[in-house]
Amino acid sequence: MKNNFWQDKRVLVTGGHGFLGSHLVTELKKLNPKEILLPRSKDYDLRKKEVCAQVVKNMDIVIHLAANVGGIGYNQKFPGTLFYDNLTMGVHLMEEARYAGVKKFVSIGTICAYPKLTPVPFKEENLWLGYPEETNAPYGLAKKMLLVQGNAYRAQYGFNAIYLLPVNLYGPGDNFDPKSSHVIPALIKKFIEAKEKKSSEVEIWGTGTPTREFLYVTDAARAIILATEKYDKADPINLGAAFEISIKDLANLIKKLTNFQGKIVFNSNKPDGQPRRKLDVSKAKKEFGFMAKVKFEEGLKATVEWYQKEKRV
Image (cartoon, rainbow, N blue to C red; front, side):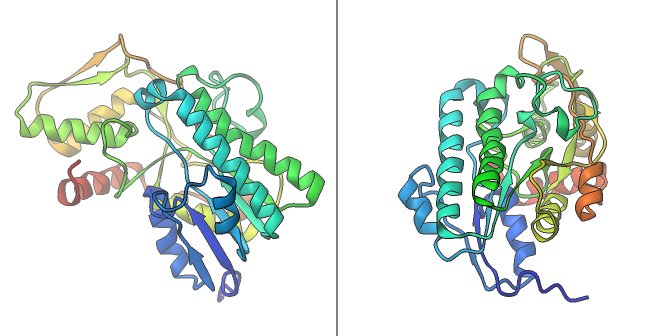
């Protein structure tokens, strides 16, 4: 059946040139919306209210992906910047979208918004049970305010804001800059460089015991499109792949895929981050029919091959 949802829509995608954004826009273009606006951060500073007013003008849908984001080291170095940038972008963009009469606002939150010791699997109703893991709490709480703001605007103004909570993403086109990358691209880069330099070992932060869940980027893009089309409620929704893997097992898998022959050394003097992450993804399936399709090793292999072929930072 032909999808007519998008055909008359003007869509603003903030962060549309980024990792997730570029995959989302590729999928959106196939649906032929009336317009897709993709402001670049170098031209449009979304921390400024007047800039937000400019980009939301005449838009029907806003999908807010733009974020200042990075791994544990980046969060430890720039907690104030991460809090300020992400909070002000969200606050101004949603306020100006409401004022401009935008029909739907899709906020992309973060798994870092969950409490440090959330029962596993993470359920959406556990989001307020405690303080987030300390190393990324400023970022996580700034993004969490999009949920608070959206629900407040829904209650007062009838504003249709939804809040999605994707787990850690990975895939071709990821950020491989060691100053700000997340765990999968950081490890891929480390193992490939160690192999090229014929190093005898690769050092990895922490003990290797924490677990993480990962969602392939094209699955995440598909989930956002489905939620935009079909979900109109106040409750936050997890987006994940329903599995978890330890950092140790992840490192060994990347070692295998990159054909690194040396050994792995864990530096337990470095932080582990949150002990476990695995989402309950039943609501996304129930509300808008989303289930992840890409198997983890298959997606990881594609990411390694993309990096080897396309990009060296």
